[in-house]
Length: 320
Image: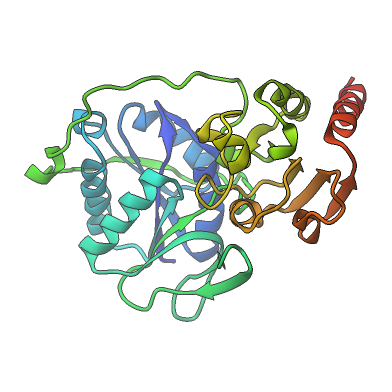
C-alpha cells in the first residue's frame, strides 16, 4: 500500500486534533507516515502510533523555532524525498498552507487547499472542497506530481487505529534561504481556557445584535456551558466588541464545527463563507427575515437577550 506523508501539528510534543483527523483520512488512501518537527517531536510518536502512523519521522533543530517557515519546508521536502509518498497531507492553517504551497512548488506538484473530505480515486486522492463562499461543493484531484493537500479542521473523526509508529530520525540539511528571516520576539497569547476557534467541535458566535462588548459575556457564558469556542462576526469585531482573532468569516477564520450557534448575526455572505460547512447550524435572531435563516438547521426567532440566558441555564441544569 502506498505511503501518505502527514505533517504533524503539535505544541512541544502535544499533538493537535487536526493532525489526528488527517491520520484518519490518510488511512483511506494509504499508510500514514507522520513527520514531526521541532521541540518535542519525538514525544509525539506514541499518540501518532495510536492513531495509525506506521512510521514517525522526527527532526529537531534550532532553525525550526528561530526562523520562519522555510526550515519546515526543507524538512518536509527531505521527508518527501526519503519516502516518495503518494500524497502529502497538511492541516490547514495560515502557516501550514504556506508550507504546503512552498513544498508543492519545490517538488513540481499541484496543491489543493482547505479540503473538507478525502477519498481514494482511480487516478489519485479526490478532495472535496467548498467553493464560492460555500455555495458549491467541488471534487478535484491533482493532475501533476504528488498531491499536496491541506485539510480543514473537523473534516474527519478522530479514530484510534494502533500501528507500529516506528520512530526514525529525519536528516535535514538547511540552505541559506532557510535562515533568511529570523524570529526576533514572541508574545504568548493569553489563554481563555476555551478550545481554539478553528479546531472547536462547538462554536458560539455573536454579531451586531449583541450590541456592545459588555454583552459578549452572554455569548461567553453559553460557550462555557457547552465547552465551546467563542466567535464573532465582522460587524462585532469592527465595532471593537471582540478581538479580531475570533472573527469568523471570509476575512477572518473559517470554522467547520459539529455545532455552530449564531446569536444576533444577520448572515451576510462574508460571514457565511467562514462557517457554512458546519455540520449543524443554529441561529438566534429577532428578525425573522434575516438571511441566516436560509442556511440553518434550526432557527429561533427571538431576542438573544431572552433566549441565550435561558439556553445557557438549560444546558447547565442538564449537565448538573
